Image (tube, rainbow, N blue to C red; front, side):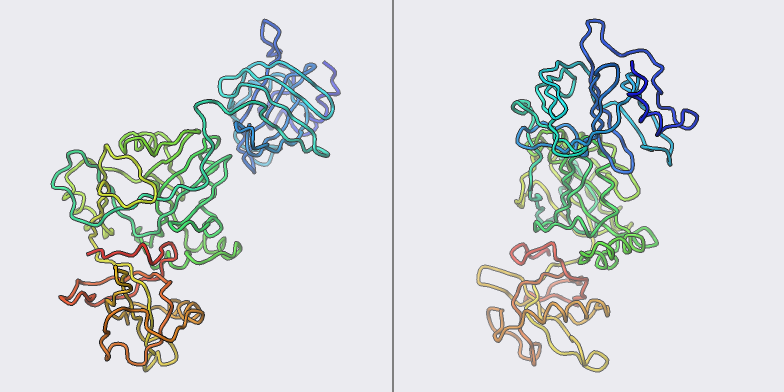
Length: 479
């Protein structure tokens, strides 16, 4: 072995400060003489995978930010790095913080390979590993940058992570009488989000398919936690107050922020958690066709527990007991799910039944009346409705529950929605809508209330906030 090949490697490392091998170990060459390869998952400052091929007594190396591709239609970046000693192929462990490449290294795959072509601009090999097999080519694109391309079809049992899976929806109703065939989960006072995790990176989509990734930077590290495991997760983003109770009011401060600098500041002041309750795609396989009980087993096997994400419990106890626990904890309610039910994307199903401990209702804002007294310069009350077959049905006015931030946000949004005529169908109570300003019915909000009148109006509704994750077509009576 020529010592010069490892000069760069050794110049970046101090053997007294790092456990990495320095080239004194024995060769990892297989007895039959086939050269070896190794892929190491490296949780450094940025998660990546190190791809190394044994060649002329060293491991020729590239860093792959998105890992080894299994889809021949998608090439991955490969950044050439310094040659490593052969015994580095067996290294796994912790490189101390502050050292070059500081972080955790683990072996993701290893095996042997055959060389079909090797030049300064192109390397073509056939890999024989436990996780990666087949023909690959690396080709230089400029400087240290290369691309790695799979030269044959994807494995038979593998499919690419989907771009979109719409969340399955619950139906409101009474819980089952007993636990037979059902599993119960707490209903959290947050917003639904589907997380697409691939190559250590997270993309978050709201229930109405909006990309909300930038709004919650504290959730990006979930990708690092899953590492090489591509997954689509279903869950809810929740903000907790100082008593560790879900607070929709606190979450309102985060829901509309898209400026990345502002989102980072708010993530320190008002952090959120992602509570994961389902897995829809995992390790290259769709799971939506599996029964809930099997999906739950897969989800729990991921052991997702971090500072800003968790997997809440699921209970096979009587729903009445779980509801009592929800009320005692001040939670929104429970969701009961049939253990043999499949996941039906984008549809509302009887297999998931939600029962609210707190009465809340989504509404569509169709207008507002002016304020009086201290609120004379702003909004007095919102005129709200619920869609039905004939159009937007009036269900009442909401005049309480507004913070100054709520009023300011509503005024900005309403400025672009004015219209001349009422969007409601049927006759409206004149006293309730006097001096109203009508709006295009595109904004969805949420109210808390005490019940319904015989005329189908909300009793004592109080504003909770806008729901940008919902569309008017999704609003249905909850009680």
